[in-house]
Image 1 (cartoon, helix red, strand yellow):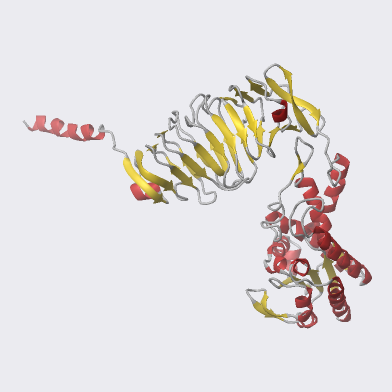
Image 2: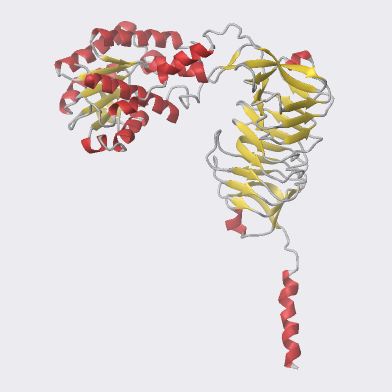
Length: 531
C-alpha cells in the first residue's frame, strides 16, 4: 500500500504548478513593482497607475484594462519591458534626455494589443519587437514634455492603420534604422525628423498622408536616394511639401533640399533650399572659419612636458555665478590632475566667483554670496596679495548688463582698477569676455547688442593694460552659428534659446564648461609665456 501513496502525493505539486497565476491588481504610484509584488507573471490595472524609476527590467504581462499607465524612468534610469501589454487604456513612457545614458526598451516576443494611444513624452525609446509584431494597436504620439525620439529595430512593428503625431515644445523624431514600416500617416506640430539611416522604407497609406501645421517642419535625414524609400498613396499638396526638407542627402552636395515628387508615389529631394534673410553666412567656408575660433585644444597648452606651470603657481578665478558654480574650474582641475607632468607640480586654483556679482563686487569685495556657499569676499587687490596669486582670470559682466544696470563708464573704470591692481602687484591678468544671455545666433537675443558693447570694453581695457584676452563671447557666437542654426525648408533658421552651451540661457552646461575651460586654458598658457 505505501508504494501507491507516494506517487499519488507527488502528483499534487505538479497539478498546482500548472494552475495559471492570476494577475496582480495594481493602481497608484509603484516605484519598484518587482520589489513590491515579487516576480509575478501579470499585472491588472484597477485604476491610473505609474511604474517608477526603479522598475528596471520587467517581464510581467500588463493588462491596462481601460486605465492609463505611465512608465516614469526618473529622468533616464534603465527600463526594459518585455511582457505582453493588452487592454484599452493609454500608455505614456517618460524616458530621459536626448542623447540618453541608460536604455529605455519596449520588447517582447508577441504583439501588444492594447488599443489606446501610446505616447513617448520625452527621451529615447527603442522598440525591439520581432518583425511583424506590433508594439501597440493604437496611435503613436512622440513628444509633449521634452525632446523625444523613437528608434525602430525591426520591420512592421507599428500598426498599419494608425498615425504618428509629432508634438510638444521640443524637437521630436523617429529613426527607421534600415527597417520597412507602413502607417496610415503622420501629423507634425513642431520641428520633427524622420531618420532613414540604412535601406529604410516608410509607406504612408491614408488619403491625407502628411499634415504639417503652420510654423512646423518635417526634416528627412540620412536619406539615400539609391536605397531609401519615402512612399505615399496620395501626394501631399504643395503647401505641405513646402514644409518638408531633406538634410544632406547621400550623393548630393551638403545642404537642405526641398521635397519633390519625381516618381508617382515617392517623395524625394528636390532643389537645394536658399537661405532667406539669414544674418550670417552658412557656407562651408564660413562654417570652417568659425570652427577655428572655438575648436582649440587649450587644455593641451597647460599640460604635458611643455606646460608653462611651475611649482608654486597660483591662479585665482574672479567672476559671477558662472565662476561661482565651479564648472569650468573643475574641467581645468581634472586636466591638470590627469596629466603626468602637471599632477606633480601642484598648481593651486582658487575659485573667487561671487553669485550674482558684478564688476564692482569683484573690485570692492562682497559681504556675502562668494564661493563657497555665500561667504564674504575681500576686495580684488587684497585677495591677490593674501593668496600670493601668480595669475588672475576675470570673467565678469553679464549681471552688469542684465540687472545691475552698471553704466559703460562705470564698467570701464572698474576694469581699469582691476588692471592697475594686478600690475602693481606683478600679477599677470587674463580678461575674458562674456558668454551671453540667450543662445540664439546672429544677435537675435534681447541683450545681444549691449553684451557686445560691454565685451568691446573688456577687449579695449585688456589691450591697453597689456593683459591677455580670452574672447569667450566670440567663441560662443561662432559655436551657436555653427550648431544652433538649422535651416528650415522655407529658408528661415530654427534655433534654440538655450540647451546648447547653457542649461538656462546664461549658466554653462557640461559642453559650455568645456568650451570655457579650453579657451581660458589657452589664455593662461599665453599669459604665463608672455614677458
